[in-house]
Length: 297
Image 1 (cartoon, rainbow, N blue to C red):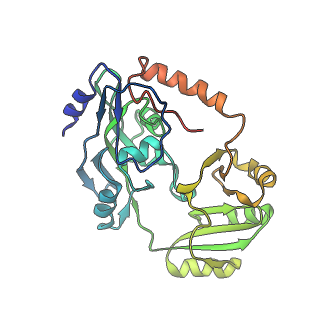
Image 2: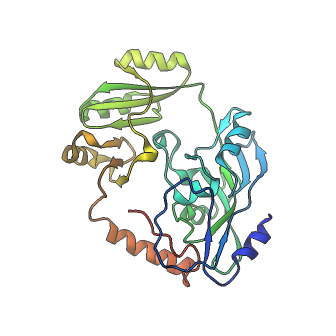
Image 3: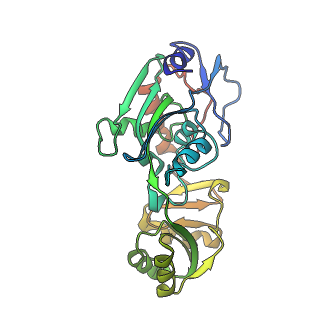
């Protein structure tokens, strides 16, 4: 299926839902009539390892992207096991966000279908091109409410030679010291008493850092990021206060401001609702696109 055919399927009228592999739980409102269910185009269009970009349909599986990029020693920083479009629409970054950045940083250019059934191109095809970049980034985490992603150009990255997890006892003062002293840690997770650290790079460099700072090897991350019920977004400097009030049942991504919590974040929904309504008013005033989908808390 090409892009034009996908746009025609969405069309200019009726309530339409886009579906991928449904590997993520999406909250939906009962009783909303959906006239059509569509799926985005799939397949690798172009891959330029030297330019570190890959073009593919939004319906392409992440497994296919990983396979073709791994053959050239590269990867795309999109977590999960579903489709490219699904990972972008959900916008949930992995716990290595400190090292690779948020999901939106992986998206360079997008072609999406708007509420009129028209194809729209936003962003730029190269890493250095930032023309129209903000509009493309708006699609990330929008759950298809602003437009249905059809095709994208993604940034690729070199696969690190080695990757290892470590743990060390640390209060907040020690955490900030290690954050400054370690060379580009891929992830720092803190629960108020222990700091879990992921280091990427050459094995000798990783071993030297571990020995220098007294780190103990860890089998893997202390949490399953995909299994976390709620993610709080806080200022990185506010992490100690949030952790102190919650105890060791939560883990914070140091330097990022994401707290993996068992409870929803209070006093945040009203502000988000206002922003979400304004965005949907601009991009889909008739509420045609994924009208039954509810933005997560």
